[in-house]
Image (cartoon, rainbow over all chains, first blue to last red; front, side, top):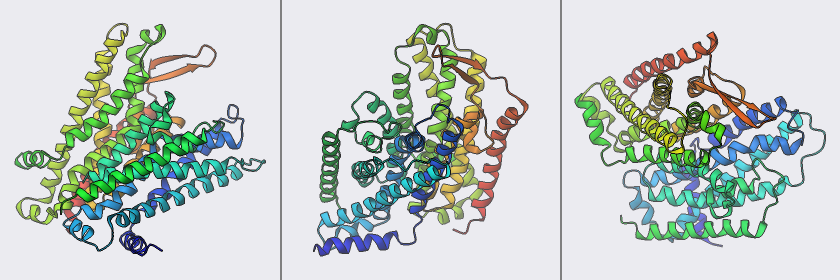
Length: 242
Length: 250
């Protein structure tokens, strides 16, 4: 058992205690679900694929524009405390390996992605039932959920690196949103698997639940970004001067 | 005036301009991508369509851009813990006033650049005729007002809360509300719907021909009220920000 990692996870949990950081992951998907369901109900003449149509309405804007920025907000928050005053001194002189310090933050970010995605899907199922969709939720939903978590992790590693690099709280969030909008263009060009911010919408099959996912390239893309940006973050932490 | 000058000194190396223009650059890249290779009918109505397109993109992006800008201006004081010190040198009201004015100047310049870019792009793409000066000027003024009201709301939140997550999430939520409002209405009385109400051009899409028709909106009384509401919000947020910040126990 990796004790330093457990210690850093515990320390990060203490830092996050009583912070309202989860509220964003709670409310933003609710706004999207409310408007998405409303739009589905009003356009049932065109949107005839029941659960699939409902998912397209729920996921489109949330996955393209807002989740990358939301993940960015959480990652910025995780580093914010270290960027304030002289906290880097305490953080970098903690007697645990730097990798454990980084993984402690990544663990909490991953946890929030899992919880956020679970909430998005719970809202989807609830709204589907409220709309009176008779058939059960699609089997593929589990694949969307897992794809969302894996690709969310890739976005998370990119944003953790940016928030470590940039002292400002707001700028990485802006980059996250711009990245999400850019992701729409990149996905449209068919290059989404090479661009981290597109991976989330591809993994969640945002706006296109019938899309056939190329599992191999998708998983490889996510893993490459997770490893690459984790290494970059560790490199940056090693070079950081007190 | 001195306080305002100092605000610009403070942001000198904080890359506030760079941050705002980087986000504007995303809009520009998006515009170059979305408007490329126009068809003949698109060239005919290019100048009208441009006002519509830019308004929609602004509606989505501006609440977030405004939250980033406000956070950059306010967070400098939270990080340095300088509010108390500054208030011994000048009134809280004048500090708030200077920050609001500093942001307003950045926004005004940002929209000049945005308009200049899209007009240049229009000429480059070969849009027929010239932009209608009256509508473009009016659009500039309304855009300025609606985004100023958003900025003042965000500045109020950013100065009141040391934890910048709260105002930034409010900005993101605002972007989402603005985007979703576009689905259901042509106007809104909410502060985030300002860009929607201020869109002077609207669009009809013919499903059979797959051709869009763009036209200048004829405002109904309720839509005019929504436009007036933009200015009301700006005044309300300014006054509320000034009062709440002055009363805040730092």
